Image 1 (tube, rainbow, N blue to C red):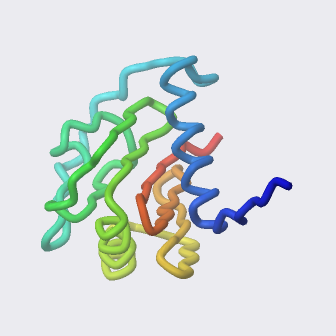
Image 2 (tube, rainbow, N blue to C red):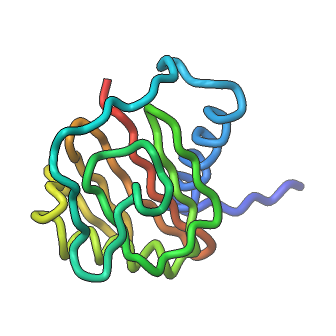
Length: 144
């Protein structure tokens, strides 16, 4: 007799997000690769305790988007249409707290937060943070 253990929704969601992001880097994406256009707007700054994605060497994602400066990314995917950071579970919870506290400064809209996870819109991107007991992930996906 085969006994299965149900997988918590947060773990399943994180696994799907990470698998999709990894698959996208492995097999390519539907969006054509292109270099971001140079910006003539003033350089953004991160809220206290934050670091801009661009200062982490991430070339894509919403302009001026930041995360806590001391979060360590275990895996980073940086493509024109999707940016994903996989982090430790504790860093994921801190990320949700940071984004919630600085939602106005970061321009987050339509924020939905529940049990250590959240979704939001920001500057033409859809964002999500999902946490599980083992890992957490931030995914930013360019809206079609």
